[in-house]
Picture 1 (tube, one colour):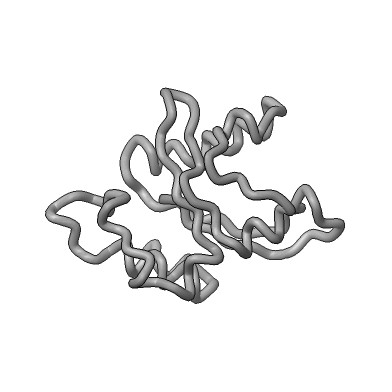
Picture 2: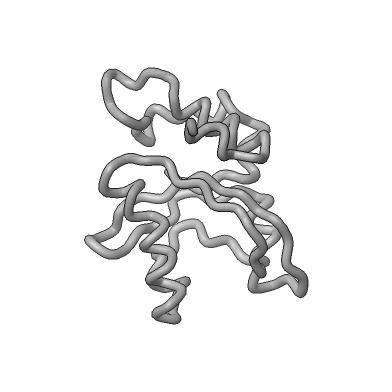
Length: 128
């Protein structure tokens, strides 16, 4: 089954398609290849992160819809500072490792609880 067919929601699918645009032979776009003008409707749901050591990453951009859902803006923060519980950090690193090590897309979907919200809801994210 093709990876794209696993992406149930249109916005993450559009982001995945954007990622597929040729990038000078690289498996994924570099930050400088991503132009927000190309995807204004996706920005509220977008997270751009970069490696910040062997077992950590820094959130460079966190979209406004994500900020509203979390109740705080994680832009500039390290993952290790946000996921203080060992299990949460281990899970986050498990999700991000294929992206960081092999430039593979990762799509997750399912119920989750935002720290500032009282109810669970469906969600889908692609990390890159």
